[in-house]
Length: 373
Ligand code: SF4
Ligand code: SF4
Image (cartoon, rainbow, N blue to C red; front, side):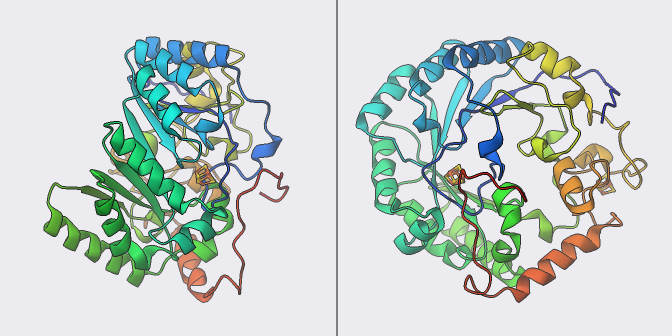
């Protein structure tokens, strides 16, 4: 996969620093790679500081600190302070585990702008079951800390078959915690979520009811809390404009320094992804084979190549195209024009037959290397 059809690339706007794959939680919908344990050691502080500086010099204006759980790194405050000093808008994406009074005060002092806290559900039972930890009460306490330190309350809950029927209660919980924003993001099927797809995919009825509930609440609460409802693309007829186009605005860096044009890019076999430990970020972004592989349109096959919607969705997600068709240059099979669209319809139909976790147990995220992932 060494095609280098390179239209003039614009600068990256968004740096996602995946500081670690370590996480105390075990969500079965985690988007981290299932073979995370096989990847190399985490970048050290000095390298992250350089990466953050180089990305800012290239033009990035927002930085997200994520993982795994970024709070397991004890240099998080140093990295946040460095990024803020360079003028980034800084975001922490966290499960809340590890966020105590001392750390939130230090992060505030370092200039952290924004915290996004994830919940698995509105009930202790399901939150704790899905994360395989007793973290529900802790997350509620962390929500109080975030509020207490003057941050806007931004909650995130990944939706799937098990918690979609609780959407109203999840919104009530968010209101009770004083959330200004609630992101209800239906599961995207990569990493552990793909492994558990048959157990997690909802029914169309569940989705319709959840969306109606969200719309009802939107009318009731107005601007008190903004609710974002991200529909799972398996139920759509057109794919999402993944990353707004490959190598267009998004630059991810994995814990071992692998630079990623999209969260799941390391699932594409044969893609020569650069490592930030071996070359400057400028070379990574503008010159590396990995970042040029799917820039522009020269890589497209039919039906995308001549489709009049290709500037809208850029042919969809390359990783989803590969994972479902075996060809990273194919149209994203979510698209009804794709000859592989039946794969998506079959997955939705098949998932309906799996009716309980007893019938097909969920595989919970762990750092033990999987060889079949
Ligand atoms: S999805 Fe769950 S397991 Fe994965 S990084 Fe987030 S909190 Fe950890
Ligand atoms: S054929 Fe390709 S470009 Fe056209 S709508 Fe479908 S995915 Fe998008």
